[in-house]
Picture 1: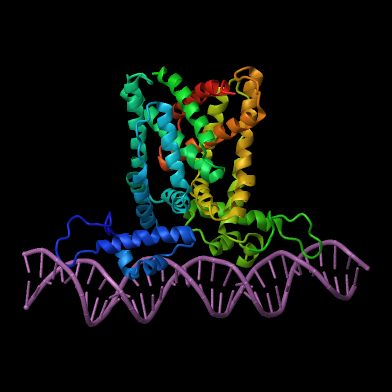
Picture 2: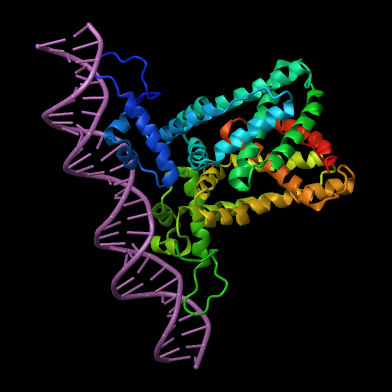
Amino acid sequence: MSCKSGHPTPRAPRAGRPRSTEADEAILEATRAALVELGWSKLTMGDVATRAGVAKTTLYRRWGNKNELVVDAVAVLFDELELPDLGSLQADIEHVVLQFAALLERPETKTALMAVVAESTRDAPLRERIRTSIVERQKRLVLDGRRRAQERGELPAERDPVAVDAVDDLIFDVVAGAVVHRALVSAEPVDAAWVGRLSALLVGGLGGLASLG
Amino acid sequence: MSCKSGHPTPRAPRAGRPRSTEADEAILEATRAALVELGWSKLTMGDVATRAGVAKTTLYRRWGNKNELVVDAVAVLFDELELPDLGSLQADIEHVVLQFAALLERPETKTALMAVVAESTRDAPLRERIRTSIVERQKRLVLDGRRRAQERGELPAERDPVAVDAVDDLIFDVVAGAVVHRALVSAEPVDAAWVGRLSALLVGGLGGLASLG
DNA sequence: GCCATTACGCTACGACCCGTAGCGAAAGGC
DNA sequence: GCCTTTCGCTACGGGTCGTAGCGTAATGGC
């Protein structure tokens, strides 16, 4: 409930014994291990504390509940996502989609992501935490991809910046949503063939969309 | 764990007192009410039983756990989805997407859908239950939509049936995934403007996709 | 009409997890 | 050296889970 520490490492440690950063990392690592082994619903705070070699009270000083802990434990995995310039919009899309799919295949993320999103529908602070820790890191890739495609001339330069933002939002929801839905709801593989069809659909549709305004 | 009853109403009641169908409906209704009021994580089996005016043991005779109960309670809501012929592919898409979005706006479904999908990553029977109770009901709309578009001449007639199935799967994941991601992850409204952009993207991309094979 | 069968409501129970409080000890700032 | 904060530990009340056991109610077979 209270403020705890917005992020595990407080920035203004006034006085007294500082928090152990080793404990921080041990807890996050133990959380990921527990997610792999037990999944979301059977993961308990006490178990994570034991795995991390830490007292349960130490855990509660940093994270108020399971949701916040798991978001932070999984968020760092999204740092792996990057967007190397592969020379064409379609190649860039396919590369990042396959990266994202590989991330969703990992049992930690597979079991945790949907769970915390579900919880966030009734927890605005958690929703904000997810947005800043996870969603924004993905969205950045969309912006970079569009910018490069424009520099290559694959997409026309923007006219109305508001419309451009709207299209960026759309692309982000379509790509991320489609991959998640394919992997978790349809429970079928996000392989090269499927990704090829998705990127072809997007590239084809984007051309027509740009002419709208 | 055991078989319980795959669906709440067993079809071969050999002898003895039959199960109360009134209790079935009371429990499902109470579950939806509890989802609205409490959300997924705070919903308890005991509370649902009390709301339904039913003993907790009666509840466990029908559903083995919270997941199965909630899937059945929410599944019937998806019967509302239908696909009237509005004369064009884009109009059909926009109509069904807005219907789906309205369904996702309801607090029962908003809090429950992602949660059961998250659980299903570690529970194959639950995944199958979700597929037959919810996913197939949505997917049928995609098949109908494509068939009508072909009859209108908006899309070319199929050649390779395997490729057609693949495109149907793709469209389904893209549409459902995008709407869910927009509504629950981005937490922004699925309004007419957004739906218009999505359907324009799809219609434009589908033309190019069909020419692939 | 009687009986076997099954569902029902109720109570009680052990097991587990939650989140917190209280303690003495440790580790830093000043 | 003193103050502050964190640490590990133990213990606790409160809540939920899922099941067992009981007597009772409702139905089909004979």
